[in-house]
Image (cartoon, rainbow, N blue to C red; front, top):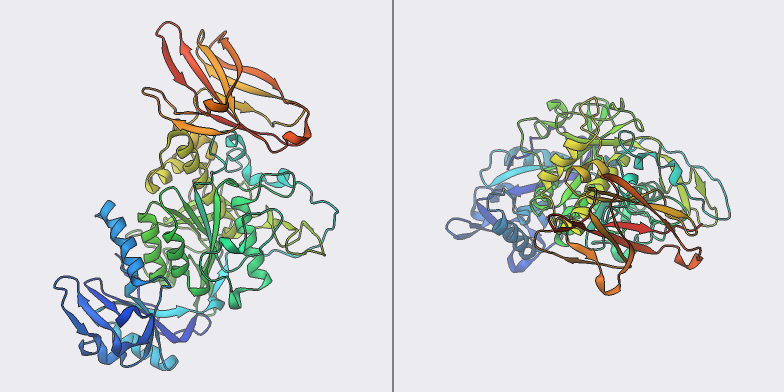
Length: 587
């Protein structure tokens, strides 16, 4: 574990609470309040050695007199037992993981600025204290977005804005979502959890049916965060991930996945921990907020995992197999700058495991000037001209100004972070649906880097979903060409060897049956399947079968799952192609 560098001792009131200190006790001991209480006074704390299990009153330790009888409370809202069970479960699978005991974090309430500074200095050389630092004030947690102006364009029916979503386009301009959308699982699946960690959201938006109060992890009263600016920001970021695939508004990258949201109303780290509790391998978190730090008379952005408590919470999530993307910030500086960030983002430091996301100007292949950058910035995507729900600059209805609102100028690393999270989720979901396997977080990052679009400026590549899925061997023999609309035709594209016998099968639901020696599991549900075509390949390479969709309006939104059985006549080898998904649009 790499402790967070000490903060400057000025306790800038623009950034920090003046009467609060976060204290993390060292890992060689367990520090708890009696009777599983969440709050009390420092002299009530009990400390137990992990090595000898000997317990003593904290007041008798060397740190006891320094903390005195100040009021303390657990920093994380989950119980100490719950946090410990999660930690033990992860370590049982990954014994080499270096994970913090989150229950050793406490919020200490002081008598004010001077008392906070004196206590911070006093604890700096205390062996039982791993780190201590002032707590960021809500005013210093800000959206990592560029300016978005409000507007009002009224229409009777919400238009379809997908043509404006250039960031979904094929690489190198976009993240390659559209050319991958026919691959099974590439738009998510209900068994995958997506958590957006933010301040507040607009519930009931017409284009995000999953964004409901019953999908909030933790408090639903967002307090000081419940203002329009934060609700718009959170809604836009969520929309990039999971806006519905329908005939209005925009589409998200993984609308089929299960969405949850977790507010930072109790702190960034606590929001991550609450999300981690319900999540596991293959799941994805995203955040688009940053911390404001001051140097002289200038303000700068620090990523989500800058405070030590957030860093430790993210490490536990990543060790559990969860991807988390965070915004790099929009102040145009190198994250390795020690004057701003100490050594948190130095190349020699141990990273939290979060993917820090930079930004480009739309589909450009170089960093936009205001994006933070550095060797720790893992990926990048569009930071300008992003069409998303909320704000109302593009379209809004005055009678329901928040639930029917869209913008086409959402931006900043706020917009880039959920795009990359969506790409990660798409690849994980497709891998699970087609191969019943999740990728390790590092293996997934390596694949996205290898097959992504190179971007100049030390902000990492832009992911390419389609290219990555092909590179992982998840495209083999079958694709869908073009849109599939009611009453129109579409092309089923076979890429098999000459003389191979094929049988194209389809069903309205999926299954997953592993067959010995087959490249892909059987995903077409044979109990309700039907044949589309039986034939012999006339030549090697792409071969198109044109299919007619019936002109019945009732078919709108229907999903059809297709897979091809292939037989090589000479060797009698039997195999299956990759599965694809057809979604029928209205006329």
